[in-house]
Length: 356
Ligand code: UD1
Image (cartoon, rainbow, N blue to C red; front, side):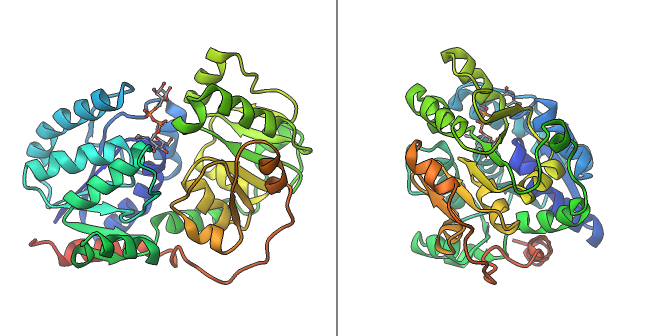
């Protein structure tokens, strides 16, 4: 059996790692196609290197563009690769433009498609990710849900018979990397002269945060006003938008940094007083590492982090500052994101469905 994974954006490289390693361990043929959605080395190459992911068999080199142009370019570039590789399964990840493009390219060629991280919903139809995930779930043949809540969404949309709860592959990779970095104090902390428990980590990259000038100004001002240093590993989009409208990303408490590698991110979050973010994955990573999170959004797909008291949804301004500086939540024994063996179940299921 041959599995072909399509990835293109930073969080997808992280999710790919445990799948590739499990496929190799079980002797299953696996190849990767990189769409090129993320092309900066710090958003792409370092993840392949640090997570020991074999090089892709094809790089589509699509790069940035409007959503339509970017998705369309991927779709047409994928055709030839799929025809050449003829996989038994095309595996797509998460909710980016690379995900929907790969799912569509595969169904048009009658190739079976499996969607990893299926069933997540924000119910915010202004988010490009929401269109991508809903459409991908409805064209895919096999849906791997990370949580019980995701399974409920799939059932409500009539997709229960194609769905399987496997847990979250990000737990798999996080647990492995956490062990590797547990005793290491990242060099970045030395450079910035910050001590464990005495700084925040913030990431802001989502279009809803960066493309509205007033909102971005207000988020940055709130972060800059915090009473501990705020490490800000910045996505290129944040740097570009801030420069366009004259927002200073080094103001007050802010410590502007280049994007972090995955092991660095895990270490930096593990030792932080708190995380402030608009990212999806980071809310969950903070939870799994026992670091309180403040999310600058109006909704989240990872509702368990909120219900268990480890995450809060806030507006920029006083609300953000109050949330970031709140007391540590009570510890929890709940494990809503699985046991770190999601990739094992994914490969198992693909092997069992090899004649679909
Ligand atoms: C994409 C995903 C988002 C995911 C995020 C992770 C979609 C719709 N969005 O958002 O769900 O959370 O990846 O990071 O697929 N850019 C660079 N270098 C790069 C990549 C992007 O400079 O390597 C800049 C470009 O100016 C580009 C902008 O960032 O226009 C946005 O990039 P894009 O890939 O379109 O979306 P992300 O914001 O990264």
